[in-house]
Length: 369
Image (cartoon, rainbow, N blue to C red; front, side, top):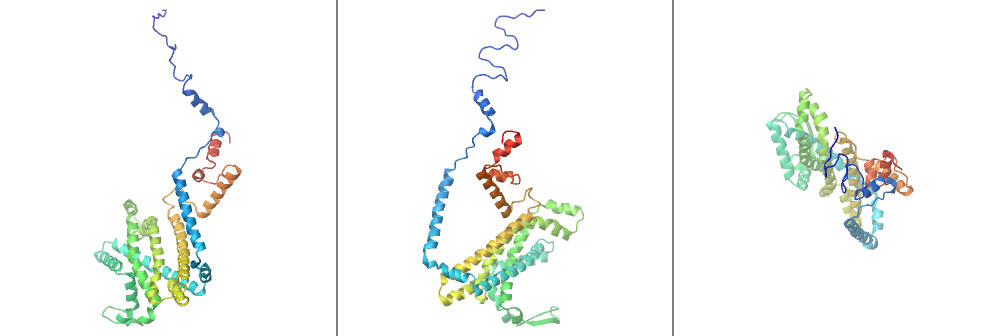
């Protein structure tokens, strides 16, 4: 049979003017896109995003910072020579050491007792729950200054302390003033007050752990104590550590209130010195510098503790300051020399630095480096 075509009909595969089959290229908007796709990666120009607001804010903050630095350096009333003289004064160093001892001892007492109180609050015993709640209620309600004075005057209420059977014989007996001195009163006041706040921090951390973790551990027959120490608490530490460190820093600064007991901590020593020589502002700056140093050390410890307990929660641990410094140095060398970023630098870090991203891509795709 022969094919018959009628006028106006079109055979398959034929094209009419103005039409184009799929996949065919012709003149029009598709030509520039094809040319851009054929351009090698090395010829592409990377244009960074503009951030005018960021530059304006940076300039404003830089001006304010320059004004602050200028006022600190040009105002002779700061007496920086006196600050440098007393910064490592023997009595100031002894006061800083006393502050460290107070903070460490009160933190141990506070968080150890607070953990016990938190577990009591979460128990099924009405007596344990009631005692824990009452302790937290009382010690969070009474001001710390009042607690310190009460503990320091405990000998007035109880001239001697004893251990034995209630309403029965006494096995140990000792004088109150011989046991609770200025340091003991400060530890009791700071530690017992801190325990009330620590109990709520630990309890909130335990409650933040998914209940399914405890149910899974119970279904495997793991003892209750092992569930708490090996499963619940390690996961709860991720939410406990940041708040707990804030409490420790607050406790470090709160040791200055112990001056009412005339105990030789940092602020008390500084106040005694400026009471003698009249250099009030320089001695206050000396105390502030030491508080800044001690707080910075605690913050560094917090970073590594959080990094340790983040192992089970993140795929990649946050970099340490040493790693960040090493990677920044590698990125800076790559910028100056034009070489690619070394392979040990994480891609995300190199992308934030906006260096080496294109080189990595082209080398991976087989294009020109």
